[in-house]
Image (tube, rainbow, N blue to C red; front, top):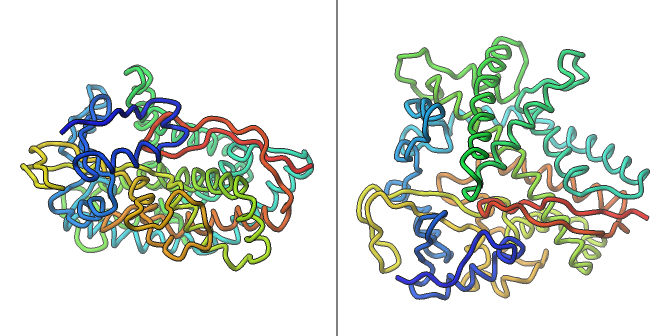
Length: 413
């Protein structure tokens, strides 16, 4: 099967990947194309095939232990049990059930917390007359809420914690930035180093919180659900390795996806003044607007799957041990499902059918929090500064797995 001209590293693709996705969907193969290095995989771009792959987790499995381990010293972690993000089958169901309970408790009161933070950030922006949508608003709001829910101390909790959140946030951003497959191996190693530091910290912080009465943070909840080492975890429990890696997955994906959603969502609303004006007149459409934000520019565009044996898909047999990449961003713009899919429309009746949080048993467990915080971010701007306008807009991040705006100026005067 021939791959159409396609370069996911190009500035044109990163600025607007949806043109390329449309071409891939229309190529021979009906939404299934072979993509070469550095993204060596079968890319699944039609809504129908993404639905099929995500709906058959026993066939199209999470990479998990099938991944080739990184070179040592980082490969020393290859023998650990995987966390929620890479688990399948009964282990995934067990850990997910435990984490649903943990997460539900942790996010109680999240909306009020997010509202207070958003109010302060918008007030500062109004006083200054401008701000960076990403660094000064989306990142600060999502990180402050996310790290608090995780259980990371805030600076106001005492002088010894003054730099703690900044350092943890730095590790997470380094891990994500160094995920880019096009980077030099030494730069990618920085991400792996940050990951090892983060896991060590999370393990010790969870131990600190385990016996703190009334603490409902994610780390405290995980710590209380760890089975003794060497004993098979039962219902509601995780092995020590599963707990550690699940904590790291929550830390990495928990608020960065929300930051990306706020950045791209506010950008798209302001780039479509009629939609922004409609939301001002009819604020009850906010929930629908967030769903359209997710459909139009999903924060996580791609996700990896794996096949252990020769597997038929879309009229082609995928060879054993092949990587399959489900392209959620392409599925969300498939004209077979969404009429006029490249139109940003908060009145769209089918927007909630998007795969902005994935699909199937592996759909994003943090989706409720992302919706809450993104809704607060938009609502606060609408109420406090409906006249806000866009200034200079920077480029998008270089990793096609994420739809991450790097900067965008908001003008308040």
